[in-house]
Image (cartoon, rainbow, N blue to C red; front, top):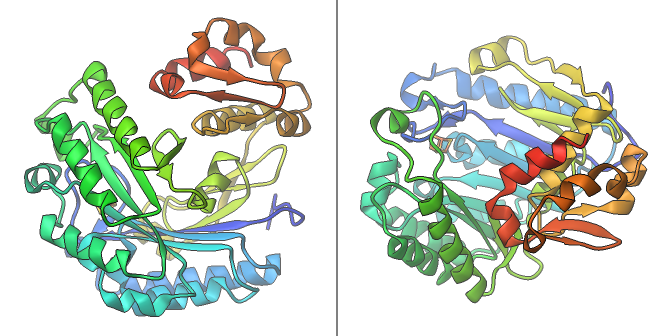
Length: 373
Ligand code: SF4
């Protein structure tokens, strides 16, 4: 494949673009089942399998991690999920194979995918029926409780997503969501603020609660997650020891991954990555799945790396940075760093990383630092 560095590990992302129905806040590309042509799902699965097969022959080695995301991959059924995963494992076992799934699609049948599948990420979002209704979610508290119970007894490593700062909810509701979910002992929790995206029903009917109020939800939520034994290893992600998501670490370190499915991006190469985007809609994808490549310049690659690595607790590895971009981190950013509050970062000889205080002003810090490029 053009631009691929065959000496480096490679991960796969598969975007399954179907959902039972659209949630009110969602701007990701996905087709609600009611609007999907009946033949699309079967065609999509066959096409993805054919593309993985072609990459298997080209790459010739096991993929480091595989992530099947959405949309809601649960709607294509466990049989199709098995077919896709089996195809990704033809050159050998991956270290981690994750699927995203909505609570209403979790059943004990999912156990049969182990050990082919190793990790499950479930979109709980809230345990409060009013909040779930407000978000336009399909699942209710009873579905979430059932899914959490099934996953807590499963052989998988697993994650639960929680959304906070939903208009009308209190900080107590968020803390209660965290405690209810944590009582089922997931190894990993993703915790993030509701975002208001253009073109969604949510933004048409109301406004965000504002940055100051959001900061209160985040601070209290972060503190509770830490008290419950979760390490805050990325701005929106928390893990028990040994439970970090390997696939997401590939994104944050700008590693190599190839994405299949409409709208899935890829990043291949090392010093300069090639960004690839496929067709934007399922209909386009089914008629012309060929990857479209846009090579990024070294500076664009550096910006991408900065954006991703500053979101993590480990931050930027200075030796790796110099090897990758040919200049030292300090030579480019010392001016920008001098303008940042000292409590917002930890700067050592080996690395530069933001603290939780820095995470709160991440967008501003990234802008300051990008000016140094
Ligand atoms: S299930 Fe996920 S991808 Fe589908 S509409 Fe809801 S938030 Fe969007």
